Every structure is written in C-alpha cells, then in structure tokens.
Length: 151
Image (cartoon, rainbow, N blue to C red; front, top):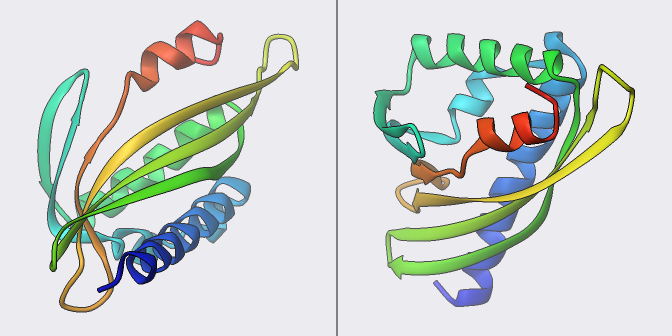
C-alpha cells in the first residue's frame, strides 16, 4: 500500500475512534462498546509507566470501557480530539501510528479549563479487514492528571 493511502486509512480509522470516544464522553448512553472494542485485536498489549499488560478483547474489556468513560466524566473531561497522526509502515501487514491527542477538562474545584496534549503509540494489524490495534504505549496519564489537579 502506498504511504499516502496507508496514512489516509489509518487517519480514517482513528477519526472514527475519536468520534465514538467523544459521543461516549458526552452521553453515557452513547457508549458503543462493540464499536470501540472492534478497533482492537482479539488480544492486545498495553505498556506504560505502571507496566506491561495484555488482555483479551471480550466482555471484561467492554465492561472496563464503561468504567473508563465513567472515570473520564468524573474528572470532568469535556473533549478528546486528534491533533496529529504520524504513520509508519512496518511491513505490508503492520503499521505504527503516533497519535497526538488534545484533551480538555473543566477542573471541578475552580471551573478552570485545562488542556492536556499528549501522544500515544499504536501498533496496528492491517489485514485481513479493517485495522486493529494490537498494542499501544502510553505516557504517565495519572501523573499528568494529578499535576493539573484533575485526579
């Protein structure tokens, strides 16, 4: 696949993911766990400051999605938007996407608007079918939230 076609395919994938994320953030009844879980492979791995974890994509993951979005609403996240996407082809079946996110919050204690920009790395399987996230690397989300008085 040509680099420009791959970039478009991955951008479309993450734009759909962003729209689902925002709908779930705006309204708990709009959380489409099937669609969000559908962005992930049957098994995937996360790495961050707390360690490396792997898990199956299934009922437990969908349950955890609900809890995750409830937490984001609790800490007053108001939006999550993509700022930029950089795509690197790894081979014909895999790609790496660095997604820069722009998240916004309304801090409860003083009503101040808080903006946090961060990047995650996503490993994607490109075939068969639509892209699937099989691994991702995150920064210190908890540390950043505490620094801004959100957690």
